[in-house]
Length: 237
Length: 280
Image 1 (cartoon, each protein chain N blue to C red):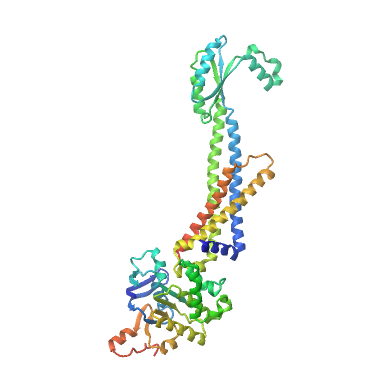
Image 2 (cartoon, each protein chain N blue to C red; image 1 turned 45 degrees about the vertical axis):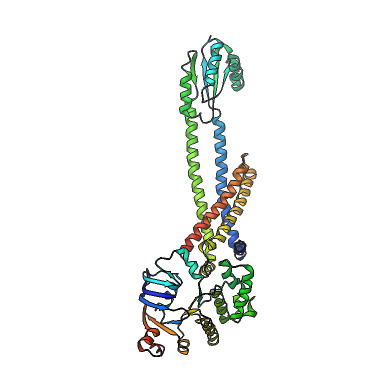
């Protein structure tokens, strides 16, 4: 599903962001990316949705390879995945319904099908009654739910979430996280970058910890080595 | 297409001030270009009027039989450069002299004015070299005493025409380039104002073509509206603001001018959005 092979990423101004990173995320897996600010979590996510191309190594996502992929193929990949950010990235002058519908219209959805799907997604994220509200009329948690509903419009096989709970209070965090777990339970792979170690501790999902652009801990590898239940990384335990 | 139209309308509605400023900027850029075009058109028309007066006068020796002159007129009229040939008799020459130089009327006498052939040239054959060449050929006729065509005057006229043409071309291109830059910058502001929307469109899987389309239509429409506004301003300036009567653009030129506004708007959008998309 997602495979990083010897991936390095160097920015001209800020220098090395990732150094020789190798890992894979399987279909239907839930994977946390943790680590301090600047560790390379967001860079990994940008490489997954091909906003960036690696300076060395290769990224493969859903059958598409970074080194062979043309710019015109990026939209094809993004229609197979959903992307969620800490700052929601909703269009302020559109209602919740319109924000979700917009993602379908952009990809050429039919009008009747769009209306039905938007209603279904709003119900799925628990906002059926708030479809006509503008983002400024919604709480942070509700805005993130709209963003998640928008990310689900194309029935993605991968959901990429960059600090989705970073701007939310404890209660909203729990709600949004439960939503992501439900989405994962329905078969979508979820890769979530987070600083919230409380969330990581609460589950037995896979954890990849990064520091200065390198993987310093991968619970999947530890589990394979020790053939036991995956221990938490030192920073989480 | 309906979505594209809606996005264009939304762009206008969301930033009405920026949209109005864009249209006005395009309008005033094209207005400056239009005013220059109007001046160029009228200068070129005036020069064409003067050019039409380029003529060659071949003086006929006294006592030349009229048959010989008639035959020569046929031959000269067959020159590809010649539009028409007229015979000016001494009496006609006297009449003209009285009319054009009335203060010297009493010193002219038909006996001192020779008959002559007045040769007018076709458009495109009035440059100094062609005029000189025709004049030299006329001199080969045995009964032609002298040929005059105001050599210096023709050369001066052509120099003015060439300088005016070159200046016009340079100024015209400069105005057009400035218009494209200003319009591009204006549309870039509109693109930047919608940068967030563009990044979201790309995140949810919109193709570059899809992202670009509303901006191109937006740029074209603003260009056409700006072009119409510029045309009205130019007309107003030419008919009311000018101390001398000026010829205005014909209908085809006016339509082409407005369409040029649209194309400039389209190009400005294409450059601005293209540049933006390469960086997101």
